[in-house]
Structures are given as structure tokens and as C-alpha cells.
Length: 114
Image (cartoon, rainbow, N blue to C red):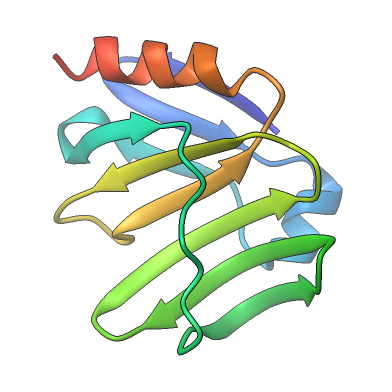
């Protein structure tokens, strides 16, 4: 997965394996829809329904997850630090990723939305 910010859009480009596991293409999020980013581990709710995606317990959680009034995109793997992107008035309420340079992206995203 590769992230970049260009023309006030956060681009999350998934590689072919990530596309297959998440059953979703790359994401292009307008920065005016991003309310913040953090490196905090999110709580995964029991009532979430995977629609569509892949879940291999303790290894991979990938795809669209629905729960209550929330719609989230997850692409997380075991042992990697989190990047959580909070959104408003967009397709998803939250995007949850894992990546080695998560703190750099937390700073980049929060700086870009100010």
C-alpha cells in the first residue's frame, strides 16, 4: 500500500494482493472530508459485519465493515502499527490501516487538513 497527498486528495493505493483481500480498489479521499488521523489502536466492535472483505483471525482484517450507523474500511495485518483516519460526510466514517511509517502519515495528514 502506498499513500500520497496530491491536489487536496489523500490517495491510498492498494497493491494487487490488498485489492483481492479487501475486495476494494484504491481509495481517494478529499482532504476536506478528513477530520483527523491518529496512531491509536482502534476498538473493533463485535457487531461489525464484513461486506465484502477478508478476515483471518489474528492475521488480516481487510475490507468494508458495517456496524450500527458506521461504515469503515480496514486493511490491517498482525504486528504492524495503526494509522486511523477519521472522516465526515464521505463513503466511510473511518479508514483503519497498518503500516510501518504510520507516525509519519499521522503528521502528514494532520498537517494537510489544517
